[in-house]
Amino acid sequence: MKITTKNKAMSKFYYLLKGTLYPSQDNLDDVIEINEVFKRDNPIEARERVIELYEKYVDVLLKSKGKKKKIFRLNELSIFLIAKDSKTVTTTEGEFAYKDKLLIDALNMDWDRDDKYSSLCLKNEYELYQEYGYDCKNYVGKREIDEDIYPVLKLPTDFELEEILNFL
Image (cartoon, rainbow, N blue to C red; front, side):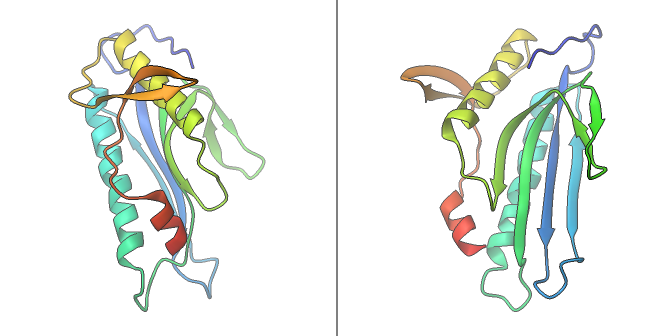
């Protein structure tokens, strides 16, 4: 993704948390739609906030395990980096979607996590921070991609995908 914006004062990108949860097995019309945008002048603050909320949703899923009222199904829970000037489209389902986005992290019942794709997106995110001189705080880590090591912005998530998907 190449981001082109003329205004240097505001962040060139922001984050989106998008997801769908079904709290009831008996009523699939009972849906919790998550579609929250996180914008800050300093994008690392927006990133911290979106990851914090993402982790809270995951904690709710895990804490509901074994309880009478639990989240029945997670369809999707994703973090995207969105270009500030991204063009938008309307999908055939009538949903609003962004063209210029990177998938930063996701939980999805039907998606087999692709570590290479995930690593490439995190690498691209890091490169955008470097290109625009944004502070990465202490989130810089490393990932192997095709036998080369690249800097990335780490994800502080400490829960295991297997545990979550096995639960759901």
